[in-house]
Image (tube, rainbow, N blue to C red):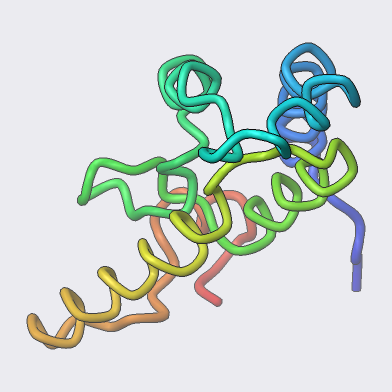
Length: 126
């Protein structure tokens, strides 16, 4: 069994790391920590427009990218390493999953269904 990251996941890591190196240097982290917002909304918007990270784990049928928890882990890891100040975890890991759970429960659709993209990458449903 291979526990390494796929080529696509490593590319995601590199892309996120490059973005964060530019947008989240230590001086910016310290500046943002002293603000009432705690993050830069312009960087948040740029991340959404250029990288679409806010929709990474949202199924494609709901307008997201349809990736799974491993890809989210890659993003979380890079954001943690950069001490990136943003509402990413609360928005993407908590709120988005709560909304998806409600939608899929009310429509009686499988909650843990692998997306077509995930099945293609990993060779089968999870």
